[in-house]
Image 1: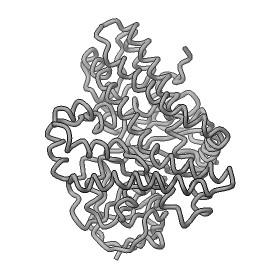
Image 2 (image 1 turned 30 degrees about the vertical axis):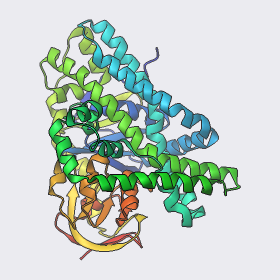
Image 3 (image 1 turned 30 degrees about the horizontal axis):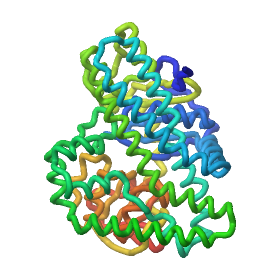
Image 4 (image 1 turned 120 degrees about the vertical axis):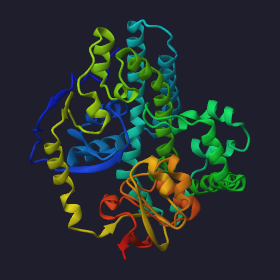
Length: 456
């Protein structure tokens, strides 16, 4: 078996040697861990992206890339999609199943035979790497295909971007009113997982969700799926141009896959939790420390028992990761990390004009609530403007309380855009820096008709 993650052993450094002629740009921010990220980072590097940096930002990491090579990598992936779309989409359920099943096999091993565990872990890495085609295809759709579809079909864009079947979170909300809390835990505990050290759903979580989501609301959403499926089928038959029809199908399909691919990854992380717990118990370290070991370090530990140094710094978000070629450098010096962060963000304070992509039209005013992490959702109240780097299904209930949604990243097929359109909430995505410019409590006007946010 050829292992895709052939990174060398991580190297701790006191400064980075970045190519000064290359323009580095922010692409997204995430709550994350090394074990979650290493595989998909390897995939984008193999597609041609020269380097990728993960820079600590309080309790999340901001991801920066070499802009030119990253754009070319997404163009390459977009071309692969358009060249053989039918083959691409047929692979999805197979690769999804293989990744989740290999994670499940790894979690189910009841042995201290580390040689057997290494074999199973390699299989999981291979299967998850193969699945990463869909991780980056979603970004390729946003960067390279959405705009042309939007321009060609402005009057039917809402239909193209609408879901015709429920994402897992919506199915879970539907099942709240059918199954017991115990049954829901068995079926959906993994939905709360993002990295393997996160807590899964417990019975009390489902009790709270049931109170916040009425059966009537969920049933209305499910009726809409049927309507969208019927309307889209009729619409797609009216497009004579084969390439335009294909691109419309790609965008429509990825409105669902944009979330479902992450759900699949979360499901795998849920099973990987048992594997990392096994490593943690052997090494006498925390689960989070185990989840922040690199692939090479995990293999070395299973073979020789060697525990990597300074894992606690990784788990505390006190390091910067620089991925390039087959290497990962880990910067630990706080002053150097602060200098790099200041360099990347200094221009934000100069220009406070916020513009983005309109995902759902409307014009409203309200107080800002900036969400950096899922553990901050409780502060969201009725009438707030929900501002976040990105959103994912766990954010949905809080988002529905708000008069508007604004995100730093994303396009028309992102989770925030879909939730906004389904619930007619004014929404602007892809601002790149709303969470940096806007402050907690700011009163803003969100003019989603024009795609601008104004601080009042």
